[in-house]
Length: 344
Ligand code: SF4
Image (cartoon, rainbow, N blue to C red; front, side, top):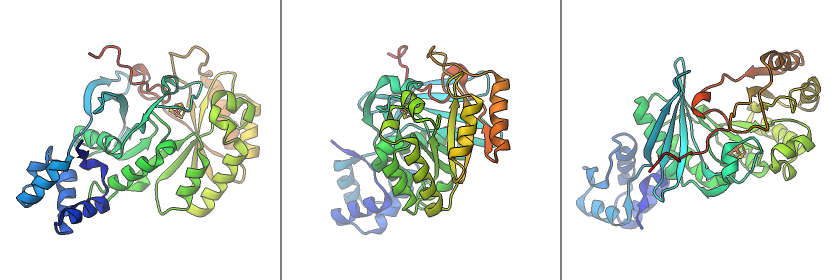
């Protein structure tokens, strides 16, 4: 089976061409064809010698996921794309529009094995990891649609990025390569439920990406019920690694806090956050729960959300309420499930 050229970093393509016996500079030419000219097949790489083209074509191909459905929100223009991968698996990605800002919310796995109680993706279970080309592929397709106007990428779609870190890391290196798409790492945010070994790896690396952790609550018993991964990586461990990340990277962390009515929205919950997280450099995004499919959870009243925010702000915490986007097309946080019932 031929391998997809979108799977490889510039360094790997350099190794490929050198192995074939071609000059090193050909790798950069190939990268240009892939990410600047965006050719659809290897034959179109006109400045490569015929022999190299034939050798590349024998082993490699250029392929992107196929967009099979596009759904646009009537409320705010958020657009969700259902994509079909080479093996027929389906994933979703979302474009969110906010004034000058266009954010791509991309997926990193088909399904997810973390089993968070409130999440539609979690209810599918884990199918497989996305390859780097399937992550960069979402970016390339969406850059084509927006005419290269994506300003931010959040890896918060289907899947837990840190359980597919090798491929996600490679996709980030490709997307941010100055010789390729040149998309700044400082505009990429990776969201995790708190896979501690990978957070440590990132803290120790040169990556400039932003880190978001789905906190959900700071009480272990409650958090474990909502997010089974908490058994392995409990709140105290998350607090420890967050401090380590602050110290090593010099960067602030974002905690995502989905607010569920009568579960984690009390005054006590807010006070616990202030008490437990006081030594961390962070901001917190409050995300009013929105998933019409799951009747076990609901959104707190708006006054209660504002009160929760006020307690945190008064406690010295930078606290924002995330604007709801795409809730009418099931594109909001935790709603992606690559529903494909209507597809042929
Ligand atoms: S919230 Fe994230 S980690 Fe949890 S099940 Fe959903 S996709 Fe997986």
